[in-house]
Amino acid sequence: MNLPSKYLEQCIHELSKLPGIGVKSASRIAFYLLKVPKTNVDALLTTIAQLKNNMQYCKQCGGISDADICTICSDNERDRTLLCVVEEPEDMLSIEKSGAFNGLYHVLGGVISPLDGVGPEELSINKLVDRCKQGVNEVIIATNPTIEGDATALYIASLLKPTNIKVMRIAHGLPVGSDLEFVDAPTLAKSITGRREM
Image (tube, rainbow, N blue to C red; front, side):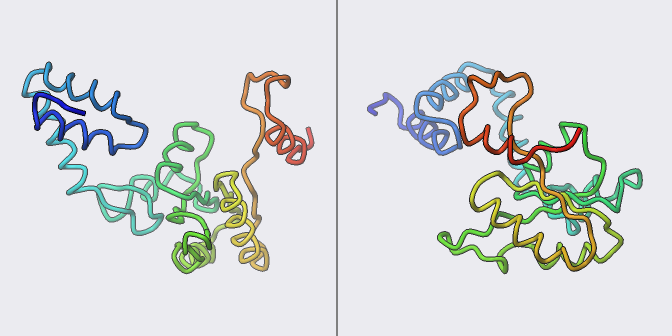
């Protein structure tokens, strides 16, 4: 790309490194930033710097937090006997948006993936087992429905089964409002095998 400004070119290059942002989108964002008042850009830069400098990970669940313990873990209204295990902090936020869960969370920090050199030791699985010994009655494993996510779920379930804690896996299958004729075969198969009694 041959642009009239090296600063614009550098901005587009850096923006295109963001997930889901290609060169075209990065270019649109860069030109938008040129059009808005400088105060808007300064506010954005300040916000990004504050996020990077002040955000930390909760010492209990591993989710994102402004303090040592996140607002979810410190909320006394939440069911402390129910624990939802997720891969990453953003998964925790997705479940929170659903409004369907009122327990606590545990963030693994990824999934078991031998090809990527990630074993159980690299994840917070030992911490999960320790947390489960503190009055947890049920664990919902909400890892992604991938080979690695399923393997991680099975590994965690094998560790927790001897503790008499109820271990559940989130359901996978059809999205709400979909038509069967448009659903791919693997999703439909997951829906059939993951059926539950009514």
